Image 1 (cartoon, rainbow, N blue to C red):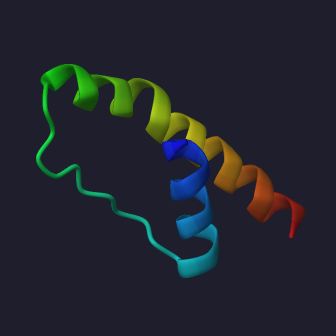
Image 2 (cartoon, one colour):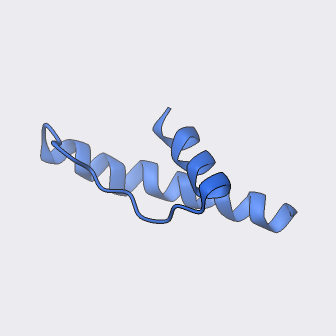
Length: 51
């Protein structure tokens, strides 16, 4: 869910920085860094290459 939403914001609005606010645990930050951010980067890179 986060991946698709953030990729869409990046592609349509040009956003490039995302701030995690009021995060419940360090595990959420680690997951974001390890899984979400790379997946968003991959989608954005592929979409931009296609354009």
